[in-house]
Length: 197
Ligand code: URA
Image (cartoon, rainbow, N blue to C red; front, side):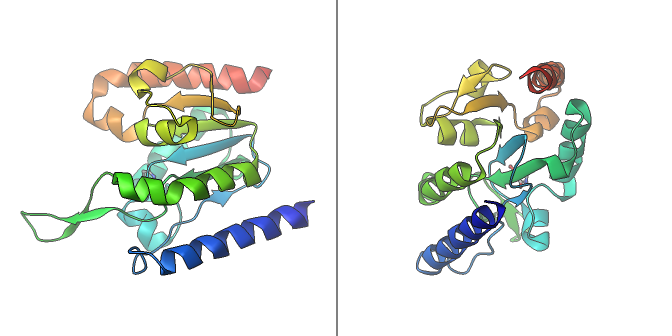
């Protein structure tokens, strides 16, 4: 079983690499999900940033610090989770000020390209819980035009009827400190949920 799952993930990854090599994204670096293949939680972010692109892992660097806070709050370790993103490459644009590449939100086209791969990834990992961070993964896994402002901190379902707990994206808290309390109380709700179900 374990071997089958590992092999299926390997095939999924190879297929994604092939499709990307035939796409407009062929020169971009892919950042795959990582972690346990039998996770309590599958955590889904938006897209990798610069640190993730350099290190080839999701949620490292500044985002990794947010992740550590998340893990501490719910009493789990990184190894208990499978962590991924909707879009597996770093969306960039040229800064008009510096001319350097900076992050931008993923485009509709990028999300549409990676969505079938995310759906397959979720089927393969088959986590107990899905936790999405922000609007992009919430919309991707529900297939609905939901807003994180309405759904955060509530138990919902993905389009495949898996248990979903949407959270604000930790970056949103950096820009809007008033969300911090809400985010912390959502984390406590999640901790209670995972310890009782
Ligand atoms: N890093 C990631 O891997 N995903 C995000 O959504 C943000 C930072």
